[in-house]
Amino acid sequence: MADINVIKVGGKIVEEPDTLANLLGLFSAMEGSKALVHGGGRSATRIATLLGIESKMVEGRRITDAETLKVVTMVYGGLVNKNIVAGLQQLGVNALGLTGADMGVVKSDKRPVKEIDYGFVGDVKSVDGKRLADLIASGVVPVMAPLSFSKEYGLLNTNADTIAAETAKSLVPYYDVTLTFCFEKNGVLADENDDNSVIPEITPALYAEYKQKGIITGGMIPKIDNAFDALNAGVKKVVITKAENLGTQCGTVIVKN
Image 1 (cartoon, rainbow, N blue to C red):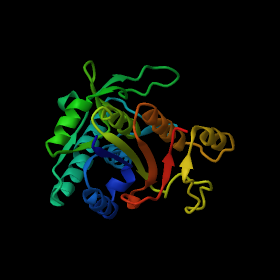
Image 2 (cartoon, rainbow, N blue to C red; image 1 turned 60 degrees about the vertical axis):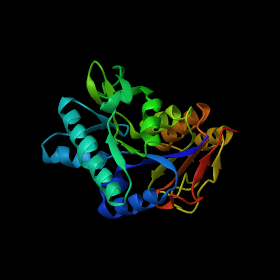
Image 3 (cartoon, rainbow, N blue to C red; image 1 turned 90 degrees about the vertical axis):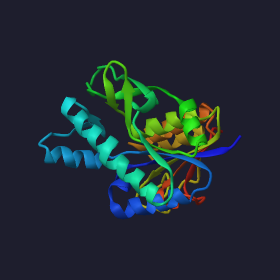
């Protein structure tokens, strides 16, 4: 079975011209089949402010009311996605920008209201790996925005890490999948103040220990939870690293045992 790399990049990386250019150069140089999933939250917050729309966050997650949904649709599906697609096309990569609504490729359910009403936020129900695999086999590189699709509600704001993990899982029947989460650090750090304190490998037992000791906290927890979920669904390898380390052996590898 052929290999494929599914790369997830945070909004900060794709929103600044210099870091975006560097990322696209490294991504375009990666050999073989690949797909890119991106965020864009800082741009959404900035443009919402310019439009006089307040951004409300709870535990780092955006409350998406009807007006905010318009903003994230414009920013994620338009501005950020198409900048990436255009940049890749300039480098000779046959990129195609997708939201979950395009070909119905990422279907979701609106998150139920419990203690918090997140509004128009989607929890991924399925990703159409067959359609993605067909596109990839025809020479297309998917560039996926963090927007999923519900038949009842239409587009829904959806966590980009989750879309990346679910996309990777959907491609398991067709490829040996490596999923890479890129963010601002060199990997998962043993000491958040020391960029060189990268933990080279995390097993379930080590993960439990690091959480208990407070070494792994906050937003890293759902990222690693997504990583183990992907591995349990058949993804071959999950890496957490810095975008500028793409194509190298640097970073933290998440393993099942």
